[in-house]
Length: 356
Image 1 (cartoon, rainbow, N blue to C red):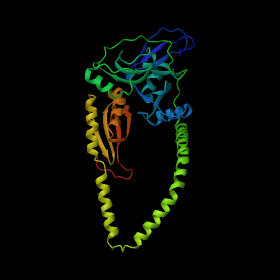
Image 2: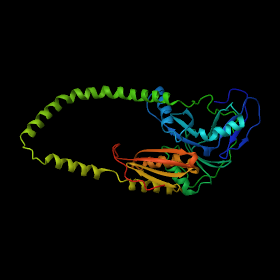
Image 3: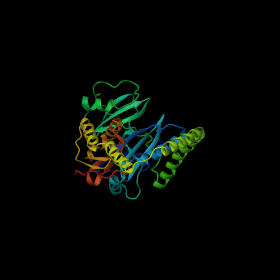
Image 4: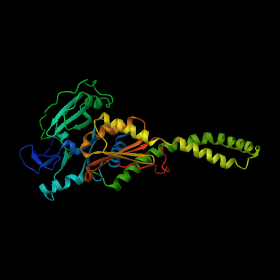
């Protein structure tokens, strides 16, 4: 939807904090575009009715934000949602120095581009953006400082599901696109960030709806299985009474259970190797790592922010991790990617901390 009022100027906030005017002033306070490398992008497609999907998208945005204090823009596009996040702490001082207390609206610079079709590489002022579009809706975006080579392009393309057309085997030639001054940057269709209290309420609403549906199903199952369970319990009681237990049985069973639990624990070093292999495919090198029981954490440079979305997606696709969570730390100029191993239990103690 185009901007409904006299077109205000657009300014681009770069990763070094500088602001560049992109369009002439024609009335209204400026709107600020955030350089692509300052932002992370996620495509989210929840099932269910519109109202429940809206709530799920908002909850997903807050709970999976890769920043301690995230500025966010969530908007419905087609059958899913575009979730944009940025480090509010990092840009706040830059905006204050330029605009004072009257903060302008901000949005990723990608939203001021003409819509695309299928696959393209966009040449930006400070890098390149790899994009995949489905039915003229952006479903994947990644930033690179240098033009992607064929290997980088292949790694990006193979992660995309159900593209309109097969990806080109070689990276497309970068395109320089005009700025759409009248683009809707979220003021007309985006959602502002939500507070933690609102997020909790939304999360409980989503979970509550799922629980209600599950309850109906399991009540029926419980009624049907109750009689069978009672009969089996009586049979087991009779059989246990017929066997004289040995004094050391309880201790032996406890020892066997302990050994079985130890053997079933996931190997964190296997999980770490999987993560390092994924980073290598994306031409990233870990600055450090740590292992805390079932949680493996790798640290990458902050400059890898544009590639983190792809890395997280590929890590999740390996099947080695129950959860993958990126968390940026601009003060340390690093991004920590926390991965909980599949098969881990919350009670497992810390195993090692090899360092960073």
